[in-house]
Length: 420
Image: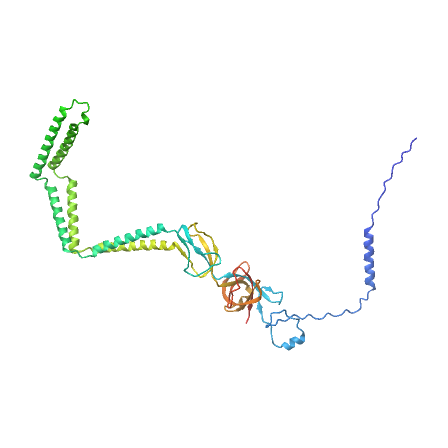
């Protein structure tokens, strides 16, 4: 019989880490028990807050009681603020240097830029020419408006001018001729006119007979249409038709249209004569004067548009952006440049709790990172009439009162508002 031996599993025992930790804790307890807990501990020295010296911007030293007694009633200069300066422990306001004025240069008429007299960083004065736009169309419109004004002024002067005797006599003759023509239209043709018309008709008939006889003699020719006899017959026939129409018109007399036209000529001639003899009516003069004023306005508008083709600097300042080039098309209403005024300001937010300590004219000190060792003097110029509902702060504008040549728009600034 065979015996089968099964292998037994071998267990690996890990280090008992919890037991080690328990030993460390017991050792610590024994050490504390060996200490003398009843022994009195040393009393720490009281903390004395630093004082600020109004005459120095350096880091204040820790003030001792003796030094405080020596200073007497000298109190630190109170500074309002929303941030603490790490160097002096003073609260400061943070803001941004902004230009006093930022004006976009906008063209008011469209066209191609033919001249550009500005570049970034250039200083310009108010009224300097910055660019010119092609203006041939605008010049033509101005010339047209000028011609309209001259015509309106000439018409007004004609109405206001005193007529001379020659003009009056000519107007009287025109009236007489118009009257005679109107009477002839009403009475019809005279016997003499009928005789003349009948004679012309007979002559035309005779001419047609002669031309017809000559045509009949060569009618057999295949090219008869190219012979002169054919042309003569055609011309004689047309003359006969015209003479017949004239005779028929005289026999029938004047039509209603002819009579009305003759009467209109009479009325116009008489009105012209009356105007020359009595002068123009006040209403006519007023109408002519109104046309002159209308023409003057049209000329003014044309000149105004022409002037806008030359873009000038609206203020004295420095060019910060140029968005156009020579040859480009400028669209009305689009800004082509940005002009910044030389003067700057700093706008800071002040908490609602410090509004009572603000006043216009309050002195301030301005510092920027570009000049860490330099201080710019300023004062409160504007206190906004309302607070920002999100931050409960009021916008306060600080304007430099001294040399501010180093302050440039866009700089980060810190401001101290002095309560003095």
